[in-house]
Image 1 (cartoon, rainbow, N blue to C red):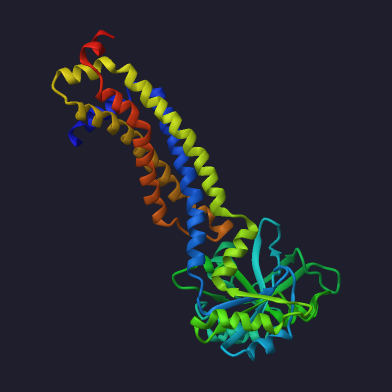
Image 2: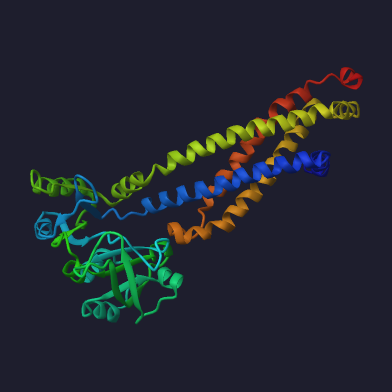
Length: 381
C-alpha cells in the first residue's frame, strides 16, 4: 500500500479547508493528551521509584497535624527500625507567591543518612551543621533562581510566624546537592530544624512527620504496625505507611489526577471520533463516482476498503504525531510547576496507538460502505 500513499494524500487534500480543520482538531486533542498523560505518567514514575526501605509516620488525623518530637526516641527503639529522621512543611515562597519553594526544616546528619541518593559534599554538610541559618538546595533549584553558595536568601512562610511577628525568614545558602539521574528531585530547600523551632511562635517541640528506614523491607508492615501500636490512644496517634503509599495518598489529597485525565480525555476523544467519522463519511460520499471508477479499473473491494482506511490512518497519525511532538517540546516548561523534566516516551507510544485506534474506528464504516459499493449504481449517482 505504500505506493498508493501519494494518491491517498492527494485525496485528503481535495477539500483543503475541511482537512485542515480536522487535522488541527486532532492535533490539539493529542497535544492535550500528551501534556495530561505526561504529567500523570511522570507522577506515577515518581511513586514507583519510592524507596521500599522507608516508612512515613504521620498524624493519624491529617498530615497537617503535627507530632511531638519526643516520638523520635521511641520510634528508634522499635525492633526493625534502622534510622529515623524528622521533617516539617514550611510553606515558603521567594519574593512572590508564584515562586513557591518546597522547603523543609530537618536535621542535616539524619537527612543525609536517610536519603543517601542526595549527594552533598562533606564540607558543605559541616558548614550547615555549624551555621544556625544555613540551608542546602538542589542543583535544579539553584539554576532556576541563579543562587550560589554564600547567597543570603529570604523566604516568606505562609504558615510560620517568628517571635517578632514577621513571616519572613532569612537563610544562607551553604550547600548544593545533586541527585544523579533524577534532576526532578533537585528542587527542594532544606534548613536547620533548631533555627526553625527556636524562632517560630507556635507548635514548638513538634514536627510534621517522621521518615523511618527499616532493616528488612519484607518486615515493613510489621514495623509500621508496631509503631502505630506504640502511640495508640495517645493525644497524637500515628498512621505509618510505606513511602509509596504515602505519596499516593498525598497525590489524592491534591486531586485524583489519573481519574481527571481519564474523564477529560474520554470526553475529548469521544467528540473527536464523531467529528473525524463525519468527515470521512462526507469525503467518501463525495467520491463515490471516483471510487466506482477505481473498481472499474480493476481495484478489488479489499483494495478500496484499504485505501479509505489508509486515508483515515494518514490523517489521524500525521496530526497525532504533530500534536505529540509539540507536547514533547512543551513538556519541559512544566519543570518549574511540577518538577518534571521530560515526558516519558511511553506516553508517545500510547498516543500513536490511540491515534491508530481512532483512525480505524472513524474510518471503518465509510471504508465498509465503499467496499460494498455497486459499480453501476455508483456511476449512475
